[in-house]
Length: 215
Ligand SMILES: C[S@@+](CC[C@H](N)C(=O)[O-])C[C@H]1O[C@@H](n2cnc3c(N)ncnc32)[C@H](O)[C@@H]1O
Image 1 (cartoon, rainbow, N blue to C red):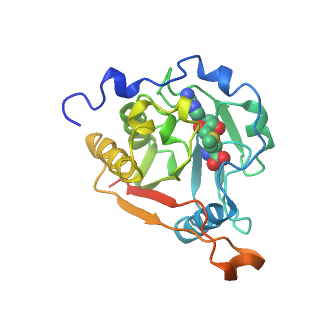
Image 2 (cartoon, rainbow, N blue to C red):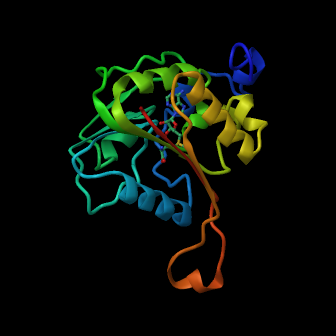
């Protein structure tokens, strides 16, 4: 990526209709399997302490946070109000199409940690969102971006839909660095099905995460 980060083709997607049409009906399903979700919740357990103000950007009816930890405040954002209302972790939420408007309605330095799960892959203007996240996350705060190898492919911009898992990691990293974030930590791991069948060693959804600090 040089010059402008993304060209018009890379920002385009197969289904260019209004994103609110696609998200009009609530989806009370898990988008990722139990192996992935278990790994994600463990990441949060390891990285997020209970005194934090957390933003779950591009959320749904679940935030994957560890049940045993009560955070100072959890703010959610998404595309479907019924999903967000059902999300028991959220103290507040709002609905906004980030492909139409990337300005986040939050004060400067007002959030300790921002989570994005199976989310970045739908952004057509990720550099603007990355800049906004740098503005609203406190100095020393965290940005935790996690995803697997699935997507609603018709709604993913071509830069994502046509890339490999490794391309996705490098792409998110490059966008963050372009907006002043320092070199993030990258995680790429296999996951394994938990529970009674764990002895079979069955693989789950692969786990990718990009952990950035607002230094
Ligand atoms: C696959 S779901 C993942 C939801 C949630 N993070 C989770 O882990 O279950 C993708 C989410 O991306 C968000 N999203 C998709 N397109 C968006 C857009 N144009 N603007 C804002 N958010 C969008 C919605 O919140 C949608 O629920």
